[in-house]
Image 1 (spheres, rainbow, N blue to C red):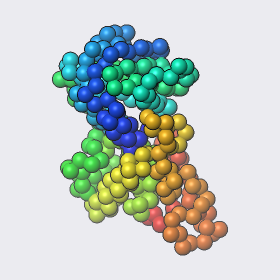
Image 2: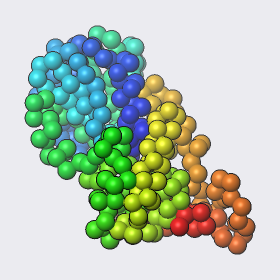
Image 3: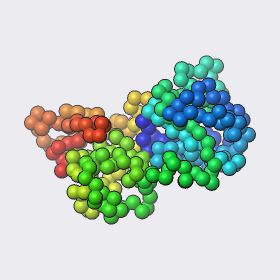
Image 4: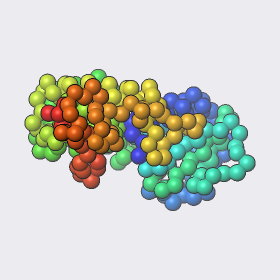
Length: 279
């Protein structure tokens, strides 16, 4: 599933491609997604102008001049492709085409776990999707004390807490493992065990890792590609994720004794960490 850096990368590409564009036509070939695309989706957004493109957690928001906003989530395998002119032959799983006066957007989603719907802009923040979403990772209010207060009564592993979108939004499995490694904190530690100083370190690491990933265009693992079809390259900078048995960066321990980077399962998700460097 695209995490915050991937969605931010897509958002930036959309701003470059379709900001202030007019929507000419919409074709929906398959509307059966996690949430069914409304039957009147095309009718409601055709003829409108795009006035703003933003991101909230892992959701894209396209604000229109007709009082509506499009909420777009890519699910597990969704891709948005941008074309100057529409290809003669569509690919398998190209389910939606949005034509603007600047370019074409094609929504491809093999597993169809994504969603695409419109809502009234005035009621956007009241939408159930957003009412329980936590603070943005780059919000100025996010600091060590804020995180400490969120975690002090939670008796769950800190890795699991980082995946809880009601605490900090946008952090997925890849970046939770990478941030904890950067902070030197074991994913096995209970959330209520972290000190305020450790929370401050973790906040800095979360922001550092996410910013680096955004600059690298995200991590291209499995299905993710940028809208121009190119790959992100932050996967080449991973320190622990998907590196079971390998040495971590600047490792000085004997990997034959330690077994290198370890992989465990927490809350149904894979966790990667160095038992020597992360305490």
